[in-house]
Each structure stands twice: as C-alpha cells, then as structure tokens.
Image (cartoon, rainbow, N blue to C red; front, top):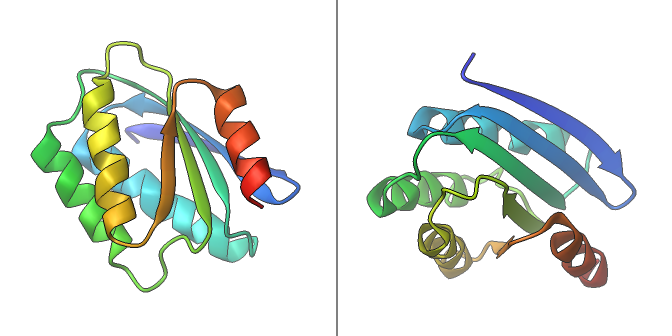
Length: 125
C-alpha cells in the first residue's frame, strides 16, 4: 500500500491524516477512500492533513485528479479543508487544485496550518 489513512470523527467533521508516497495513484485512491468514509459515517465535512513524501504532483496531474473526484455523483458534499505538511510541495500547485475544485462546485480550501484549517472549517459549519 502506498499510503496510510487515519480517520478521526471530530464533531461536525472528519479529521483525516494521510501519509505515504506522493503519486497520482496515492492521491486518487486516498480521496476515493475519504469519500467512502464520509458516506459510511454520514459526515459531509472533512479536514485532510496530508504528509506525502516525494515531489509535488504536476499541475496537469492535479487537474486530472481533482476533476475526476469533483465530477463523481458521490463526491464529498460539504466543506473540505486541506493542509499539506510537506514543505517541499509547491504552494502554487496546491492553490491550483483548490481553484479546480471550487470551479467544479466543491467547497474546498487549502491552508498552511492545521489550526487555520480547523478555524475555517468550524466557522463554516
């Protein structure tokens, strides 16, 4: 397995941490698993804290992954707060992924810290 996912219900959202190797397959697979957890626990809001090893994905890869997951009928219905803990990952690519999601009607936002993400998510619920 290229990643490990830990899911912790926190009141009105799921706190999800993911570790492993950074690749298109890893990101696609863990996002699909996050959707499954949201459905299983009937929780529409998530905080994803990602700490994947390796270089940033390309903008075209991010576009493909985010477009695919955003267009699924069972996509995450609520708010998505996202924090990438790997300081080597390109913040511009992360922001691009946020823009792609938002342009597809997904309420998603990228944050630099977990505390900022938690504050936004809790203020939005």
